[in-house]
Image (tube, rainbow, N blue to C red):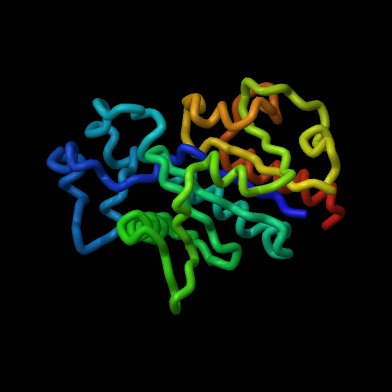
Length: 224
């Protein structure tokens, strides 16, 4: 069986043209360096103040930490984990489980900027990060007989890790985890499934949620 994780509405995008002349952007922007072309709240906060959905944007660090946690897990190493990254602007990518994500944040930002510009990352003709030309809804429908769950602080609070995968591991699971900071899922995400679960009585960072749901699955699969 397989665990599929969608990091949804991630704050992953190139710097919008409307703010490229702002001093906070111009001081770092270089068309020769991919990593400077990615919107980053830590660098561009003052330029982002008037952007729509500003609280969800410019957070490539969240995606970075989530991917490091997921790709380094035992579950991924035995081939039972699938990871997709969905951006706030509705671009969807599938992550090759064998990709080695750099731990250096600037190099990661460069990789993500190249991904968005080239619409994919290829090595020797094979995708390490592949574009998916379908909506989230269409992709979810492709995963037959899977239980879909949105991880949200306003979901049903579970009391045990077994409550997350309450049907056991005989079925596939699809988990939706927000790749943004302090904000709420859009209606487009909440319409995917009515099944919403909370892991803790307070909000958790996305990379902590990723780590926990994978660990819970690994424990139930008796990988330890």
